[in-house]
Amino acid sequence: MLLDNKTAVIYGAAGSIGSAIAAGFASEGANCFLVGRTAATLDAVADKIRADGGRAETAVVDVLDAAVVNDHAAAIVEKAGSLDISVNVISQEAMFGPLADLPVSAFASSMSRLVTSQLNTTQAAARHMVTQESGVILFFGGSDYASRMPGLGTVQIGSDTIEALRRQWACELGPHNIRVLTLRTGGIPESLPDIPQTEPAKQGMIDATLLKRAATLADVGYVASFAASERARSITDAQIDISCGAYAD
Image (cartoon, rainbow, N blue to C red; front, top):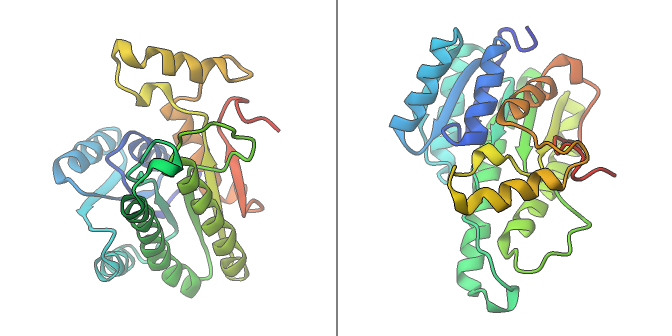
């Protein structure tokens, strides 16, 4: 299996994207540590992974508290012997609307939470990965330099911020054999509620692709597992496109 005996921590594991990545990792043999804010939803994901023959443990962790995040990462290493893969798919508190109309304090708070979450979790993983001279860190989002859509508020700016972090982490951690990548989709229709109001958005995701089908949650798990594996050992500091051609260069 691609990730046999690897140890992975997934922050935001109870959400649709996080649970898909966790399931993909577990199916490839990884020992998964699922992190989130709500025990019940994390346990549901872990129970499904275990029912399918995988390994998963859960923890409620405040990712805005650096000491708590560091203690949790240290506990993983003490128990499993290493921390090989770290993924943070915790979504930002998105604010939509023209930038001229957004309250500065609310905008700053949204961006601060995003950056704090990403720095805390990545720093915690990086410390152990540098010691062991190996590891993979995955972000989720991606930049769209061709975007000309007004009213996105913090959403695209947040994704661009994550990309800036990815580039800096990649150059600083590369000498320690640590790869840093971003997974980028054009939207996952099945991650939206199955209600009439979301149907236009779902169809829009499909229509924007070259393949005339959108990526599935399972696809995200497959690609994430490959990206975290030794078969992708030559890929770092890049966006991996899972958009079915929606963002084709």
